Image (cartoon, rainbow, N blue to C red; front, side, top):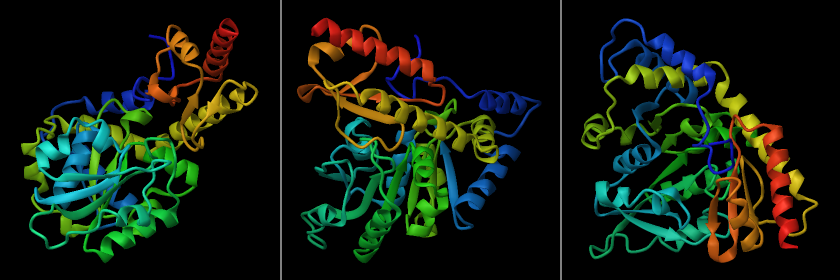
Length: 344
């Protein structure tokens, strides 16, 4: 399969990550996180997010999201999220199935919650017939490639805490957001009052693994047992930890995210002079959402794999990765123009 624009999950593994895994593949080490790599990583996460932070490595983003929701909620609780949120659209009901919590979804024009939108779901407190709102979950960057500003995250954290609730951030593409905003991970989470975080790496050069990072110590209760019950405890955890250690200590997270964001901007710039192509959301990270004629994008899918985002509205998503090249962009745009000419 040639390099395309379907997903940043389709890319390979950064060479630095492969090297870190190979270096960890020496002698024996204790299993289930009782190894030196995991110990160093947990300290590294504390250095990154603050001394109160604790992290739980899991296999994937769904595992991280569900473990965070498990930390915040019980089965009679509810989580407020955008209608487009990954926990609502792409996790096969895992939060409901595993935690039992209800999702209170809110339509948004750009994938972003606001305090005003969240407040539409904040009612029924103390009423035993209603699921009790307990958490707000946002995605940074969002599923539509848009970004919350630091002030917007702070406003949601303040709102949550004023109602005795918690704020969770799905950070599958947190590196892309940090690069775009020019801030550190801590400045975008801990310093704003975020209570827990799903920290991703697979979309930015890692082989596998994500982390559920608990920033509010009050939530860090029995999570090692809950992770085990969820089937998310990795036996040879040193290989997962070695990836994150290399990712954070060498600046790889920043280099990869900077490159994929820049490639999306380059793709966007090549689309400016094509009147049949309408970019529907701001290009702020490594995704470009466009509307174009149905026959064009379905024909283009014969040349490149990518996802239709809203088939009824002829909106498709093009994702750039850490290994996307300028030549990939040039060839893709040329193929797009050929399909447009054929339809013309």
